[in-house]
Image 1: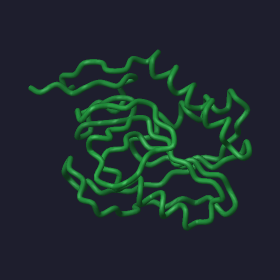
Image 2 (image 1 turned 180 degrees about the horizontal axis):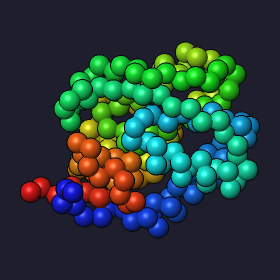
Image 3 (image 1 turned 135 degrees about the vertical axis):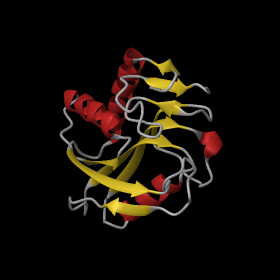
Length: 176
């Protein structure tokens, strides 16, 4: 396991996810949105967010989309490829696109544009972490869990070359 230290513990994450769910519930045009998770990093956050929304009376349909622009590196290439598309008809539906981290903005921007073309009447973005210092595309998420500096983070669905994804907290990878 990579050497790391905790940035956000489980209790802090749980409280923030509950506040995000409450904000989303208040903004939703109806209680049956489609929530689309960007694979793979968003799956833990999406699961907790969906359960928090259910506690508030929101019954979403869940779908996933997979896109990539990192290839085999940790630096974004700028070219986003849809590797798995959604399977739910989004026409006339409110949609929430959920991602683990908003970094350069390339993926979220292009996936949002792709989903917009599918006829959603209301589309919002929700990211667990936001690194605005890394942004190279003009995009802001509608809902943000935490803003973080330009550091390498693992846990709660995020990994570093396959390590750390299952940690129940967010941690900063330490230089070795």
